[in-house]
Image 1 (cartoon, rainbow, N blue to C red):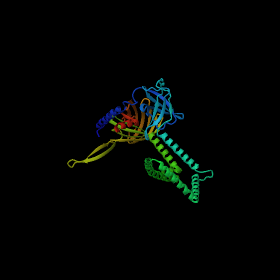
Image 2 (image 1 turned 180 degrees about the vertical axis):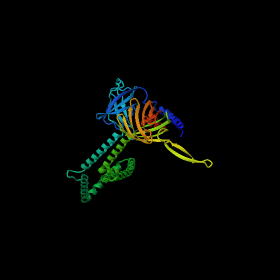
Image 3 (image 1 turned 90 degrees about the vertical axis):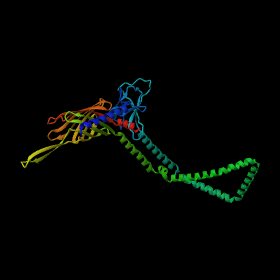
Length: 459
């Protein structure tokens, strides 16, 4: 592989990404002068450095650092100077959608008030989003369970008997009494019916014949309606009976305590899953440059933060620096039957690609990591200056028998937005005097930058 071609191709790709990133972030909160403020929160889960600060749903700043202050989390953040924050401003932690990232929304307060002094504290209110929705849903289910228990208790008297059953028995007794009265006074009842019929006939005779025809037509329409009402009442009676017996989804929900508990557990599990997904942060770096002794140096790194204090580093590196395998072959030749001549040929094999896979832990501004560094075992220590966009580090790897281990000291400096420069000293304690330096430039994206880039292509 030609290192020059690899470097040119990488530079072209980086130039394209720079143009796109500037297109995306030209109206973002990373430009212009900012004012720094602070706040204290009880729970900073899902909030990281560079988490956006929004006003009316638009990015107006970002978090600079998160530190532990006693039992609370001290958050230092910056707001664009053109956004005037007043002493009555309030912060609120929110989340975007079911699986969206968390952000901080700021209420600027009254427009007529003066600007809050830089470095002042702003109070934080309770958050909103899916977390509070899950808690509300669990509380509603608990209320439904209590109401159902109350209804069941209300349907029983002081002695524990079913009140509805007693009412039905009383209705049956009244019906039986009416039947006995009707049987014993059948003649009287028939006479009363005859008298009513005669009265009805006289009233009908006195009614206008046209009104009579209209009235009969209306009565003929009422009949089918009453039949439908009767059928509906019968169906409703069956449904109510099934619900009382605990049949169907509604019946189980109202009568079965286990179903309510399962629904509550399911919502709790979903809530925990969403919190874990929201806690994952990523940082991607791509750079290319040259070494003073070996030539081009191109590398890609991906840092994954499942929690603020833990991270994994994955990466690919292509350069001519590092261990090389040698193979020596002896060849014997003779000329015109003369003595044989021995020729030794040495072949050097180079690895085109080297891989990084490290497990690390973040302690305040320090980072400790160990694992594969350019396909060899090693350890590393980092120190971060988030306010200045600088990260420094030391790596010890590639323990060659003759030359000793490779000690690398490096520094990375943020130039502008996602553009950075990297300087590294290679093999500084080499026994064979092969110390060198690497200078490169590249791009570094956070997951917020990648989300904006994906949003542009998804439109």
